[in-house]
Every structure is written in structure tokens, then in C-alpha cells.
Length: 310
Length: 241
Image (cartoon, rainbow over all chains, first blue to last red):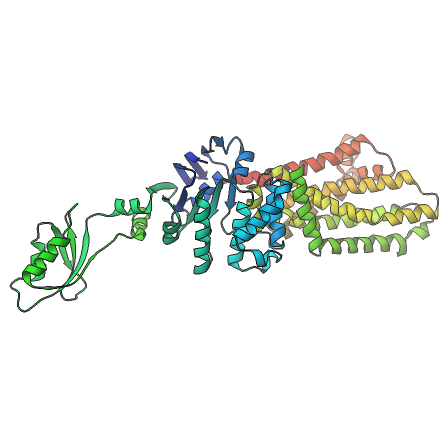
């Protein structure tokens, strides 16, 4: 099922929470919304799930519009809202039944679906407990279970792993990845490593606009400028030239900087679209220096994120 | 209708899972039973096979109890954010409001049903005015529905239960008492307008055993008005800034 968001705008007063956003998500794709707090991630999700109406623009799910046919749209979507609100006084299994009935799951299917979700989300031992007695991790699983109870084609998950411990995060990620193969998934997060680990594609949103759209590798490449190497050498006896000036003399090198006062420790930036690795090695051999360290600096997704959203 | 009933079932279950329903039933039966059978001005003192005392006291106890029952219905959902869950399920805002309305009303009807032994006792004691008693119950049921609807509305505009409770009492007291007081001090058209607005006058005419379409119209308008306003308040997320 394809989600296509078309020129979506949502204004609160004079402030534009979402500003003319358009994108598509295809079946089997897991897309991550990334952005600082207040960037418009939740608002976009709320519009897709028919919780809020857009000021302008539309969202089509396989051609069905959220404006014109919210009833059908809601059936196709499983939604985990931000902060995972739940009826805390209900028992897990009653709650799942309530959600399944609301989503129009057939009576004959009801038992089967609930059992399956309890098993998939690892709620076997907790199913008769009241939700208020559960730990945060289990609540999150209940939230996921209710979102998937009617086997929707589309899953919209607003910060699905917030508040979980590292083990639980890994489990939930596995679950999402597994589900992502047959469903269309959009999830939001402000944790970069999480989006990188679970999503096929990343949309970075800032101030209501999409500032980047692509796989994590794409984004890195896009942000990465010239090759950056850190190099440490040890001189053997008395060299006639200092390493710094020798490095600067290499044809592919653009600039050399010493790193925080350490001896013979440099950061070497190459000219655009060239690599200096081999030349540096050859230089060391020629000058009889020991090459202690040579490392290519990889642009981190964090840097991409910071650059795009600042 | 299916979807409305799913909401109603959950709400009723939550009344009966918590103490709300039991406290309400016990206090209501306690108060109405005491004043009907034991207090100074009880049925035996009056010496007539009527339930006027009971209807008089229920008229007031329900007025205070209903806001206490309805205050939680939507205010709590607004506060905990579960309204977002409900509104993104395959149901409409109208389904939510009507489901909650029915749940609260059914709880009141259960309380009224529990007083059926009063009717049986009275009709064994003497020659009961069956028309008046049935009309009285019917009137109580309708006036309760109207106040439930007002209570659901006040609950939908806030996320604070106390505010919802007080506001429901405030709006309710106009229909319950103030319009009646105003109408008794006025003559002519204005007086009859206020008399028509007063819930008391309609309740009184019903409990005389006369079921008039004007009374029905009055209560049904309040009920529908409250429900429409509540559904509008829930959908305000779409247009609010």
C-alpha cells in the first residue's frame, strides 16, 4: 500500500507546523521521520491517521483520501500515538479485544488475532494484568499490539522505542523490521542510531519542511565533502623536512592541520574527489617514517543531522 | 450502532470495575429509600399509594449524581491522551459521544430499576396511581438523559474533571431551578417561555401521567443539543489553533 503525501500544510495560528510537505512511501518500505522536537513529525503523522485535518494538501493511501474517506483510511492504519496513551484500568487482553472490535475485526477472527498479537509482542505472561501494573516496556508492547491488532497494511509509529531499555529497544526494532517486510511503516524518532538501524529510508524534517530524503548511506555521501584522514607518524632519526610541510607538498592534499598539540599528529584534507591514502603511505616509506596511524574519518549521521537542522 | 455499543460496553465495564457504579447505586438507593420510607414526611404519613416523595427526592439526587458520573467521560480521555487512540480507530466522533452517553444513561436507568420494589410495595399497599408512577419514572429517565447529555458536553470541553462537574451543575441548575423561579415571577409570553425552558414543569406534567409531545420534544432537544455540541468539541482538534 502506497502512502502519498501531497503538498501538506498545517498551520496553527501564524505558525506553520507542517509546511508544504510531499513524499511517497511504498509497500514494504520502512521510513523514518527524523527531526528535532517540534519539527512537525507528530503533526504529519496525526494528519495521516485522520486525527487532525490538514490546512492544505492531502494524503492518499492507495488513492483513498484522508479528507474524503477517513472511515476507510482509519481501517487501513495501525497507529501508535506519541507517549502511548492507554486505558490503564483495563486488563491487557480486554484492551486488545476492545481495540480489535473498534477496528472491525470479525467476531470469528477475534480470538485468533488477539492470541497472535499477544504471542508476537511477548505479552503471554502479562495478558491478564491491568495495564497500570505493567512496566513501561510492556506498555509499549501493548501499544504496538493494539496498533497491529487488525492486521493493517500501514503502521504509523510515533516514537515506538521511547522509554525502553536497550534490550527492549533491540527487540522492538526486530519486530518492526520483521513487520516492515510486508507492510508500509512510518516511524518517528529523534534517536539517529535507531532510525539508521530500522529504516530503509530517512526523511529529515526541520521547521515543517523536509530537508533530506534518502537512505542513511545516501545522506552520508551527500553530506560528506572531501576525504579526511588522521595521520600519526614517528620520525626515524633526523629527517631533513618536517612531516607537515612534506604532506602539504603532496599533489592531492589540500590542507594539513596539527591536532591538539600532539607530536606529529595531523588531520589531512584531500582535494575534492581525490584520495591521499596511497601518497601518504609512499611518502612515509620514502622518508623512512613509521606510520603509526592512518584513519579515514567517516561523516556521522549525527553530523548530517546537525548540519541540516541548525 | 455496533461501534457505539462497543464504546458503551467498555464504559459500563469501567463503571462496574471501579467503585463508581456501586457507590452511586448504594447512595442513591440509600437516600431515596430513606426519604421515601423513613423520614418525617414519608409515604405512610401521607397515607396515599403514590410515589411523589420518591420522585421529588430523586429529582434532586439525580441532579447532583449525574455530573459526578459524566465528569470523567471525556475529560479523562483528553487528559491522558486516549482520545487520540479513540479518534484514530475506525469510528466517528459521534459514535464516541453517543457511546458514552448511553453508558452513563444506562447506569442511571439501572439505579431507577433498583427502585422498582418501591412501586411493587406501594401498589400492594393500596390503590396505586399506575399512570402517575409510570409517568414519573418516564420523566426521571428523560430528565436524567438530558443532564447526562449536558454532563458529557461539559466533560468534552475540558481535561479537568472538577471543572466538568461544576460546569455541568451550573448549566443544569438553570434548567432545574432558575428558569422555574424566573417564570413564576413573570407573566405573559415571557413567563410561558421560561416555563417551557424549565425542566421542572415538563417533569411535573410527565409525572402526572400525561405524556405530551411538547415534553418529549423538550427533552429530546436538550439531549441532541448536548450530544451535537460534545461531538463538535471533540472534533475541535481539526480547526483549533
